[in-house]
Length: 64
Image 1 (cartoon, rainbow, N blue to C red):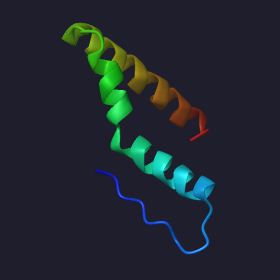
Image 2: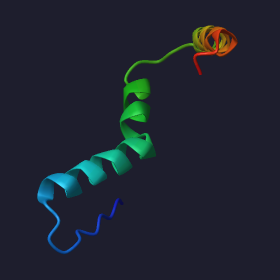
Image 3: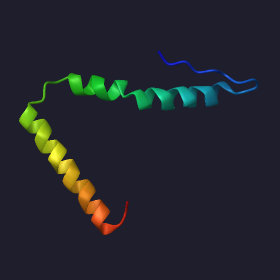
Image 4: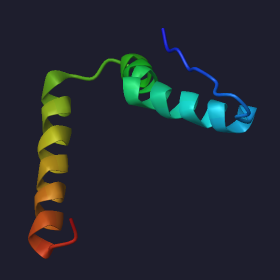
């Protein structure tokens, strides 16, 4: 359960923004979307390798 303490005089918008940020960090939505359809282990591994190659090329170019 996510608990957000609202400070004295803080607007509801700011508190909602903090809640959304905390909620996103937990990864609940990401997990839910990944469970909507079964993905074979070979496909998941292929996507993981593809992502790692992409990150590596970005690092070599010096953008990260």
